[in-house]
Length: 276
Image 1 (cartoon, one colour):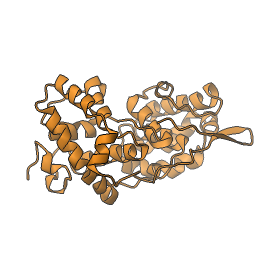
Image 2 (cartoon, helix red, strand yellow; image 1 turned 30 degrees about the vertical axis):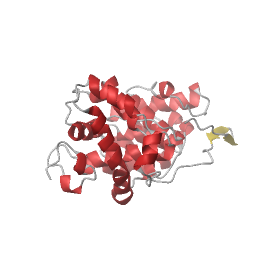
Image 3 (cartoon, rainbow, N blue to C red; image 1 turned 180 degrees about the vertical axis):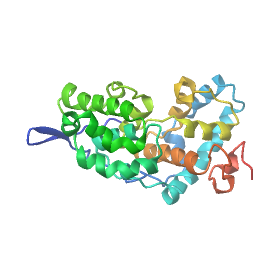
Image 4 (cartoon, rainbow, N blue to C red; image 1 turned 90 degrees about the horizontal axis):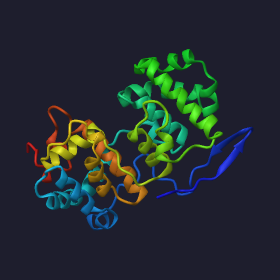
């Protein structure tokens, strides 16, 4: 859902003002029912995509997943990770945080979060900074030169190309170096309340184990995998936020690459790979 946002002027800068209907932070809407979810999703899109991935019984798998999704959202409410970038809908903080999170654990990013936004609270501050100043703050995250280049291009995108008006399209947000669909879509979901889906290794692992399907080696580059999640993400922005965060945290905390904690998983009752 597109949410128009107004602009306020502070000094000589234009700053995006958030939509009046902001999501519940940090997790969004976590209480719903299977019947509501069936109305807000497009399972036929997911089923067709699963068929292209040679998954057997896609209809029953999607039906089972939707029946367990309310439990997954409640699990998120009780167990989800609370990071500072989940406590804001400010596009600058959300977008830059996604760059800081690339190939880096959230706990590590949290150690530099306050310093980074204390030094670069808006696009003009980052645009005016020297590369060494940026590298010094983000040094604990690794990939210093690459990340500095990306952040430099992020600042140029907002400050120069958009004159301080924050872009709100996936194509524009993907312009900086090494910014792909995940970072762009995450910004639109968590800053602009868009009902979109994400795909990364956590999402793909949960889907593969739950469905029993073998997914492509690079699921984030697969149109079919994206369509599976596109059909499952609820059209309500608050539920879209919780849906994405729930799958992200489940994959990171419970459905881990090795030794998954199946007994703690809210999806285990319908999972093809459950060890219970």
